Image (cartoon, rainbow, N blue to C red; front, top):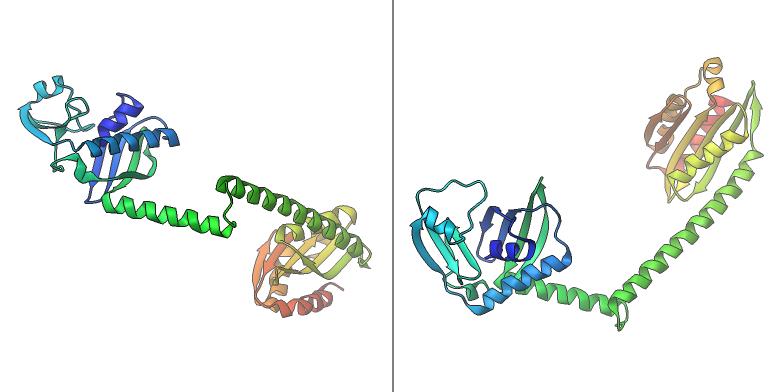
Length: 306
């Protein structure tokens, strides 16, 4: 039946490529070139439910394969058949197929038909998974319950979809505002830190504690500082959402002359926050578990660099 419904909606090119049928669910593979859109899925479901409501009886006959194919019987894609085949019909004008398994006596026993998923399994072959009868009824009850729960959470709006769209738009606007505030805060932190560099043996050393919203902000802050201060040697001990992180930057012009290596240095400092990390000779980061260890990171960095 599903094979016939698919051909009715998608066209005669559709061939069955395999199926697994259980009491109240099925998996059906078929040849098709593109994903099904919502309208196509709804049309397939409507076609199946229409035939189910008709209560069409199964008619099974054994015929020569040539005669069956002349009547329009649909064969399983890639399957080989003998000289004689069983042909099962549900309404002569709807479903006529070569039969390779068991079938319901009449379509009304299928009950409600609902597609639960559709997707690609290989090039040119797609898979539909569907539920029927009590499983489909249970699914619809769960979906109805979910909709009611959403309506209650949103104070029973007249238009649920519009209410959710408004909520998403407000969230996106809030995120933009928060990002803007983070940028402003990071800019202020950068200006403060620029005045804290200390010259030591031909290098500009900055060792400081900072509080930032995310790891990207930490990396961006380090790179902005190194772009404005030449021969920079930077260690930032950061609290990010109550999680300790450390970033180390060594200007490439200092690597050979000082023997410093950002990756080695950050691994040593990470011990103070019960963590680990690494990276390149000029830039490395580490994370840890002990937020209280950040002052120890600053103290150790000063003993190593100043």
